[in-house]
Length: 319
Image 1: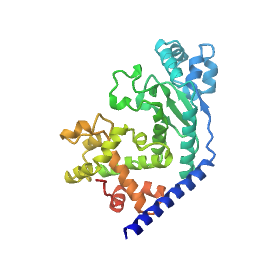
Image 2: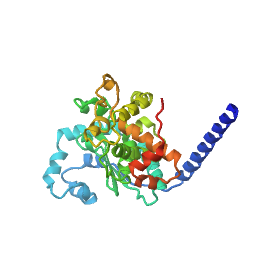
Image 3: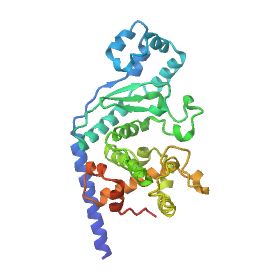
Image 4: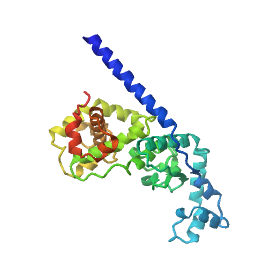
């Protein structure tokens, strides 16, 4: 009996691998070409004399409410020059990131054929880490000065939990997250469950959009943080259940378990050991469980209520 069970598991595993390979072969053939504009380099090379030509070529990057004097001042600003210099050192080319973005766009277009591949602009933003990547539909803007490396001097004074993802390896994950937000409806309910599964849906789309990235990179954890979440998944879920948090509508739960922070807030001794956003991690695994156990399309899942997903996910955390 055990031999038969082992053989069955092997067959299912092989079938799953074959199906993934077949899907990836189809995705690799999708045309997702895009224009890459190193605007950071163009602006760094500009002068007061050439500014009009730059504005004419990219008017959407020069809001009309700002006079030319603002841009000329920025062109001559010593801090801006230092930013441009550091970006040039960290990103003398953009080929690897370009390839990953191309793969991302291919995957998005496979799952959402109506997706329009955006032009990609690399920019500087005076280290505006709240807007590292911006996706508008037509354009994807990547602020390279927010991806210079965890220990870069520009990030002194910024909290560790934020700057741990200021690495170029996170660019495609951040881009995938911004695109995913266009497809995942905002939660209509105020329950903790609804908001957990909102983030779970975003992360599930990352599974599909960037399967070539690790789970740690998808959620923005270090390897150690992901290991902690995996090792304690059962305990986290038990805490949520025993404290009746699933259908709780207290918005403080969002900052405790869903939003970026130094750690999650169980109000226990283990808090300092935990990564933030463990509610997102649980929501991700509930969505994965639902999709594994129900024959539904991604678009259907995205429109399905949190309660219906939860009731049909049969989620059982790993012990």
